[in-house]
Image 1 (cartoon, protein in one colour):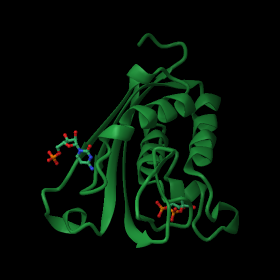
Image 2 (cartoon, rainbow, N blue to C red):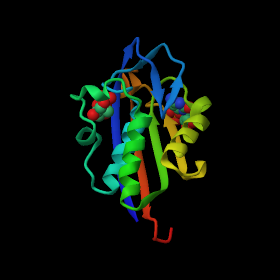
Image 3 (cartoon, rainbow, N blue to C red):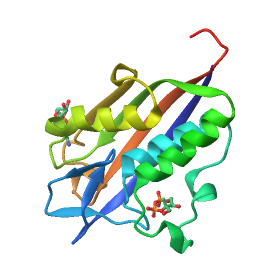
Length: 161
Ligand SMILES: Nc1ccn([C@@H]2O[C@H](COP(=O)(O)O)[C@@H](O)[C@H]2O)c(=O)n1
Ligand SMILES: C[C@@]1(CO)OP(=O)(O)OP(=O)(O)OC[C@H]1O
């Protein structure tokens, strides 16, 4: 078994859509990034890459490359999954923690879990998503942005879970 850890932060910017775990969340404000700035999927991709010591998302999808401008992070996650499956690994479980003062994410959690599970080619009960505020403290508490942390475990196809 291999485990990986990922973390990412994106700042809020007016006029941008808010996309989290591949789901468009109704919000007057979105996150700034070269891609769609899906902070949850970025943390998740770094965890997947980390599990197999494959570098980070910036190594694979540089933010200086125009082909990634505005790209859906679901597409990037699919490409990361190709790297994982090509090495004969599958996802065993994923645990994601998102730190956001707003919006309230609980109404969207089920859809977000389904989207991640579908892209990771696992069942919904292998994917956990939790949200917390920062109780008004720090950059998240000041509503300057959203942070996300992810842990994954991978198993070789031939390995017992
Ligand atoms: N953006 C968020 C933040 C939190 N939640 C849910 O609210 C619960 C309480 O959050 P605290 O930060 O006050 O502990 C938390 O456990 C989540 O269920 C949310 O949905 N969206
Ligand atoms: C995803 C990429 C590539 O479009 O851009 P951003 O959306 O800016 O995201 P970030 O987490 O800052 O870095 C990874 C980038 O290479």
